[in-house]
Length: 225
Image (cartoon, rainbow, N blue to C red; front, side, top):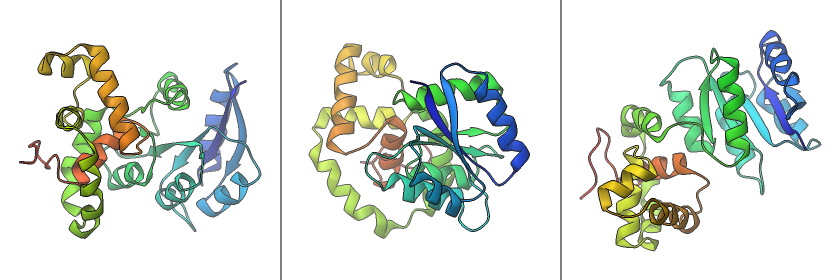
Protein backbone atom coordinates (compact mmCIF):
# COMPACT_ATOMS: atom_id res chain seq x y z
CA UNK A 1 0.00 0.00 0.00
CA UNK A 2 1.42 3.43 -0.88
CA UNK A 3 2.21 5.97 1.82
CA UNK A 4 -0.83 8.23 2.12
CA UNK A 5 0.31 11.85 2.36
CA UNK A 6 -1.60 15.00 3.25
CA UNK A 7 -0.31 18.45 2.21
CA UNK A 8 -1.09 21.38 4.51
CA UNK A 9 0.12 24.76 3.25
CA UNK A 10 -1.57 28.05 2.46
CA UNK A 11 0.45 28.45 -0.75
CA UNK A 12 -1.36 26.66 -3.58
CA UNK A 13 1.66 26.67 -5.88
CA UNK A 14 3.81 25.05 -3.22
CA UNK A 15 1.25 22.31 -2.66
CA UNK A 16 1.11 21.77 -6.42
CA UNK A 17 4.87 21.36 -6.57
CA UNK A 18 4.92 18.87 -3.72
CA UNK A 19 2.00 16.96 -5.26
CA UNK A 20 3.85 16.59 -8.57
CA UNK A 21 6.97 15.28 -6.84
CA UNK A 22 5.04 12.79 -4.73
CA UNK A 23 2.81 11.65 -7.60
CA UNK A 24 5.89 10.45 -9.48
CA UNK A 25 6.70 7.98 -6.67
CA UNK A 26 5.23 4.48 -6.89
CA UNK A 27 5.11 4.17 -3.11
CA UNK A 28 3.38 7.50 -2.33
CA UNK A 29 -0.05 9.01 -2.87
CA UNK A 30 -1.39 12.46 -2.01
CA UNK A 31 -4.81 11.72 -0.51
CA UNK A 32 -5.71 15.10 1.01
CA UNK A 33 -4.81 18.79 1.02
CA UNK A 34 -5.64 21.82 3.14
CA UNK A 35 -4.82 25.52 3.07
CA UNK A 36 -4.83 26.14 6.82
CA UNK A 37 -4.96 24.31 10.14
CA UNK A 38 -8.72 24.52 10.61
CA UNK A 39 -9.34 22.99 7.20
CA UNK A 40 -6.67 20.34 7.87
CA UNK A 41 -8.40 19.13 11.03
CA UNK A 42 -11.74 18.98 9.21
CA UNK A 43 -10.30 17.06 6.26
CA UNK A 44 -8.50 14.59 8.53
CA UNK A 45 -11.80 13.53 10.07
CA UNK A 46 -12.76 11.92 6.78
CA UNK A 47 -9.40 10.87 5.35
CA UNK A 48 -6.97 8.07 6.13
CA UNK A 49 -3.51 9.64 6.22
CA UNK A 50 -0.10 8.23 7.13
CA UNK A 51 2.10 11.35 6.94
CA UNK A 52 1.16 15.05 7.06
CA UNK A 53 3.48 17.62 5.52
CA UNK A 54 2.70 20.62 7.72
CA UNK A 55 3.51 24.26 7.06
CA UNK A 56 3.87 26.31 10.22
CA UNK A 57 2.88 29.85 9.26
CA UNK A 58 -0.74 29.72 8.13
CA UNK A 59 -3.91 31.77 8.68
CA UNK A 60 -6.73 30.74 11.07
CA UNK A 61 -4.71 28.05 12.87
CA UNK A 62 -0.95 27.73 12.59
CA UNK A 63 0.90 24.50 11.99
CA UNK A 64 2.15 24.15 15.55
CA UNK A 65 -1.30 24.15 17.16
CA UNK A 66 -2.64 21.99 14.34
CA UNK A 67 0.17 19.51 14.97
CA UNK A 68 -0.57 19.51 18.69
CA UNK A 69 -4.24 18.71 18.07
CA UNK A 70 -3.44 16.00 15.53
CA UNK A 71 -0.90 14.31 17.79
CA UNK A 72 -3.30 14.33 20.75
CA UNK A 73 -5.63 11.96 18.90
CA UNK A 74 -5.27 8.19 19.24
CA UNK A 75 -3.17 6.64 16.45
CA UNK A 76 -2.47 9.96 14.71
CA UNK A 77 -0.63 10.28 11.40
CA UNK A 78 3.03 11.27 11.59
CA UNK A 79 3.66 14.98 11.13
CA UNK A 80 6.62 16.41 9.26
CA UNK A 81 7.01 20.16 9.82
CA UNK A 82 7.99 22.32 6.84
CA UNK A 83 9.72 25.57 7.70
CA UNK A 84 11.35 28.38 5.73
CA UNK A 85 14.13 29.16 8.19
CA UNK A 86 16.49 26.74 9.89
CA UNK A 87 16.53 26.98 13.67
CA UNK A 88 13.34 28.98 13.84
CA UNK A 89 11.14 28.85 16.91
CA UNK A 90 8.29 27.34 14.93
CA UNK A 91 10.32 24.20 14.24
CA UNK A 92 11.17 23.97 17.95
CA UNK A 93 7.53 24.39 18.93
CA UNK A 94 6.49 21.86 16.32
CA UNK A 95 8.79 19.21 17.77
CA UNK A 96 7.43 19.87 21.24
CA UNK A 97 3.90 19.60 19.86
CA UNK A 98 4.58 16.06 18.66
CA UNK A 99 6.02 16.35 15.15
CA UNK A 100 8.39 13.58 14.13
CA UNK A 101 10.77 16.02 12.48
CA UNK A 102 11.17 19.13 10.40
CA UNK A 103 12.51 19.95 6.96
CA UNK A 104 13.32 23.18 5.18
CA UNK A 105 10.93 23.99 2.33
CA UNK A 106 13.77 24.29 -0.16
CA UNK A 107 15.10 20.80 0.62
CA UNK A 108 16.03 18.77 -2.49
CA UNK A 109 13.16 16.49 -3.60
CA UNK A 110 15.09 13.30 -2.90
CA UNK A 111 15.65 14.38 0.71
CA UNK A 112 11.98 15.21 1.19
CA UNK A 113 10.98 11.80 -0.19
CA UNK A 114 13.49 10.05 2.06
CA UNK A 115 12.14 12.00 5.03
CA UNK A 116 8.55 10.95 4.29
CA UNK A 117 9.61 7.32 4.05
CA UNK A 118 11.61 7.56 7.28
CA UNK A 119 8.75 9.15 9.21
CA UNK A 120 6.32 6.56 7.87
CA UNK A 121 8.57 3.73 9.02
CA UNK A 122 8.68 5.17 12.54
CA UNK A 123 11.98 7.00 12.49
CA UNK A 124 12.57 10.67 13.25
CA UNK A 125 14.01 12.66 10.39
CA UNK A 126 15.74 15.32 12.43
CA UNK A 127 19.13 14.27 13.71
CA UNK A 128 19.23 14.57 17.50
CA UNK A 129 22.24 16.86 17.12
CA UNK A 130 20.12 19.23 15.01
CA UNK A 131 17.32 19.07 17.55
CA UNK A 132 19.84 19.83 20.24
CA UNK A 133 20.91 23.00 18.41
CA UNK A 134 17.28 24.07 18.34
CA UNK A 135 16.87 23.36 22.03
CA UNK A 136 20.11 25.06 23.02
CA UNK A 137 18.65 28.19 21.49
CA UNK A 138 15.05 27.97 22.67
CA UNK A 139 15.08 25.83 25.85
CA UNK A 140 15.48 28.91 28.11
CA UNK A 141 11.99 29.91 26.99
CA UNK A 142 10.46 26.79 28.57
CA UNK A 143 8.36 27.72 31.62
CA UNK A 144 9.77 26.00 34.69
CA UNK A 145 6.30 25.18 36.01
CA UNK A 146 5.61 23.07 32.92
CA UNK A 147 8.70 20.95 33.57
CA UNK A 148 7.79 19.71 37.05
CA UNK A 149 5.21 17.01 36.18
CA UNK A 150 7.53 15.54 33.56
CA UNK A 151 10.55 15.35 35.85
CA UNK A 152 8.76 12.70 37.88
CA UNK A 153 8.53 10.54 34.77
CA UNK A 154 12.30 10.12 34.77
CA UNK A 155 12.03 8.12 38.00
CA UNK A 156 10.78 5.24 35.86
CA UNK A 157 14.24 4.91 34.32
CA UNK A 158 17.14 2.88 35.65
CA UNK A 159 20.46 4.62 36.20
CA UNK A 160 21.81 3.11 32.98
CA UNK A 161 18.76 4.24 31.02
CA UNK A 162 19.23 7.80 32.30
CA UNK A 163 22.86 7.65 31.13
CA UNK A 164 21.73 6.52 27.69
CA UNK A 165 19.04 9.21 27.55
CA UNK A 166 21.59 11.94 28.31
CA UNK A 167 23.84 10.69 25.51
CA UNK A 168 20.93 10.50 23.08
CA UNK A 169 20.12 14.10 24.01
CA UNK A 170 23.72 15.06 23.23
CA UNK A 171 23.17 13.76 19.69
CA UNK A 172 25.14 10.51 19.88
CA UNK A 173 24.18 7.56 17.69
CA UNK A 174 23.65 4.07 19.12
CA UNK A 175 27.15 3.10 17.98
CA UNK A 176 28.71 6.13 19.64
CA UNK A 177 26.79 5.48 22.85
CA UNK A 178 27.91 1.86 22.80
CA UNK A 179 31.57 2.93 22.52
CA UNK A 180 31.18 5.54 25.28
CA UNK A 181 29.54 3.13 27.75
CA UNK A 182 31.43 0.00 26.63
CA UNK A 183 28.25 -1.80 25.63
CA UNK A 184 27.14 -3.62 22.51
CA UNK A 185 25.11 -1.62 20.01
CA UNK A 186 22.26 -4.12 20.42
CA UNK A 187 22.20 -3.43 24.17
CA UNK A 188 22.04 0.32 23.57
CA UNK A 189 19.19 -0.20 21.12
CA UNK A 190 17.35 -2.17 23.81
CA UNK A 191 17.89 0.63 26.34
CA UNK A 192 16.60 3.23 23.88
CA UNK A 193 13.52 1.10 23.22
CA UNK A 194 12.82 0.82 26.94
CA UNK A 195 13.22 4.59 27.38
CA UNK A 196 10.67 5.20 24.61
CA UNK A 197 8.25 2.71 26.16
CA UNK A 198 8.59 3.86 29.78
CA UNK A 199 8.25 7.55 28.90
CA UNK A 200 5.60 7.02 26.21
CA UNK A 201 7.71 8.69 23.52
CA UNK A 202 7.60 7.98 19.79
CA UNK A 203 11.18 8.58 18.71
CA UNK A 204 14.65 9.87 19.59
CA UNK A 205 13.70 13.47 18.83
CA UNK A 206 11.09 13.36 21.58
CA UNK A 207 13.73 11.89 23.91
CA UNK A 208 15.90 14.94 23.25
CA UNK A 209 13.01 17.36 23.80
CA UNK A 210 12.05 15.71 27.10
CA UNK A 211 15.66 15.71 28.31
CA UNK A 212 15.73 19.49 27.89
CA UNK A 213 12.23 20.07 29.25
CA UNK A 214 13.04 18.22 32.46
CA UNK A 215 16.53 19.70 32.92
CA UNK A 216 18.21 16.32 32.48
CA UNK A 217 20.33 18.11 29.87
CA UNK A 218 21.02 21.83 30.11
CA UNK A 219 21.03 24.32 27.28
CA UNK A 220 24.61 24.72 26.15
CA UNK A 221 25.38 21.02 26.36
CA UNK A 222 25.76 20.17 30.04
CA UNK A 223 24.04 17.31 31.78
CA UNK A 224 22.08 17.89 34.95
CA UNK A 225 23.73 17.04 38.19
